[in-house]
Length: 337
Image (cartoon, rainbow, N blue to C red; front, side):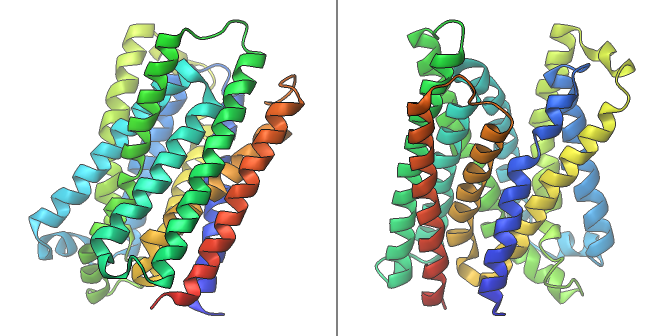
């Protein structure tokens, strides 16, 4: 099996796992959103990245000391930007609903997170077969998420007890777009944190584990905005006392963290297996698989009950476009060098 085929298979597992990480939240009924999200932040963005990097990357401190401060600061800045995006995601969900927020965020993230690395890292091959295939796939992704967004909006209107005001809808869309821009910073961190990966390999880290040297500063920086926002909500809503109830919910947060960080590790591994074009074709494929899986899980868990047949048809049409994008991206790998 070639490394590119192996990378594609890893991406499929990563997308399915990432789309599933929020399912345990449905069972954390004794905690408010900020309780479970803060617990997830501690587990997924602090505990797992720290332990994983310390175990799998030899001479970790030397890796960071050997690389320029500029590279490390860039990775941290991308992580902080991504962390702010997660806060905006929560606000957008409150305004325009989960379905529409996910579609807008992932569509924006897929487009920006793909095109920016391709232009900056492979600008000389924009009109090559690989470059044109990526452009076609991004167009399919955007078409798919727009259809999913339309279906999601119709679903929210059919299920909600009252329609959102135009002002709230407009603000929610703006926040979702900003979130999509910030969400792509994770991909930027991997793309521009390559020098850390190279140093980690030179100091004994395996190709499988070298990317963990990037995830640690990226995730720790992303944890800061999430923790601050959750702390603000805990104080404002007076929900900190809920931690005394539902002790089993920490296990749910652990499962959430394991699924999310596990999918992140798998994406990093797949990006490496796909070579220098990994962040270019891997990111839209990752985003597409998340939307496809999240759509299927949403339907299986009853989120589309009473939404009507038309939103369902539009949703499945959008998913079809995303599936086509997956095949285009998979086929484009034969042209990569």
